[in-house]
Image (cartoon, rainbow, N blue to C red):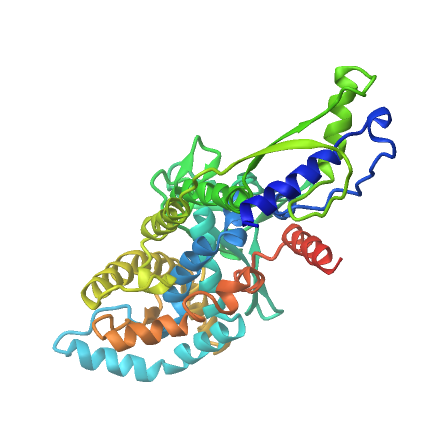
Length: 455
């Protein structure tokens, strides 16, 4: 007996079991509770995260988006790191060599750099830069409350909510004449708190209208770098949601079942309802035994799995291209050296360098390094008077990646936690915690998911 004949025989038995009327069937079959299908599990999985902003939903559920976003944040800070350096703020005196003058000041004020470096270690600045880069990818801006001790020295940086769905929960108030922030209004529940500009370390991606919201749509929604990639993520999810149906179509054909209903005495609506109730409990592979006669016809559809997987891969590449991430960093095989170097160069000198410049500009401003330098002099009992320039300034120095060395590229890819599949890439919880995006809402979503998996 062929596979087709065995399948047709099983369908005849299955169809006979569908007769719900006692006059024709004698003893009626009862089929148990309908088991949860892959479609049900997927719908439940995605529903758990639906309360989160769209960007965060897809960061959690779309592995390609997560790899790309984590790659940008990692290359911004973790791959090579950073250090600080002192620079003279005033030109050298007449007949004094600039280099000699600068070296003398650096030697004289080396303790300022030491003080600033200690604060950076205390607040874990490299982690904050990773957090800022990741949050700016999502929402176009990032903000942190500067927590100080009794001596006014920063000891902690607490992340503030910049969710695009609630943009006015953190509202910069701008002076119309100077275009500078005069205060931050932060909404917590029904209450509003006012923060001084020097109490908030605030980053913004692209501020073309001086609103300090970054690029905005309709003055409501702050746009991040991932926004243009979201349509591709949405379509990739549709492929995932459709795949269980495609698999069933490939494994099991469409089956047309004919059942003798001459013995049923109820209405057409009652018959339809009764048949549907029985059908809900039947799944592929279930064994059914009956003594009823029925006929079946199987239709074998042709589905191109290559086209489906090709479409999914095309959308994955679209996400990486949109975010400017080299394919070597997102597990795309068979990329030759020339292409790899070109993509790496464009990525490091474009996307990453732009992110580093924005972060560097904020850190070197009056709210962080400017404030820390003055604080260093106060701690030394030689405070700088208001309006008076400090003799030295601290600069942020992001180390440069050697993109010309192919071996270095491979090492960098391995450093990126297994091409984005390791701790940060595979487990979104770790990346969210590092980025200081682990909110109570996010935690509730993950707890729900873990509880469901344990059942």
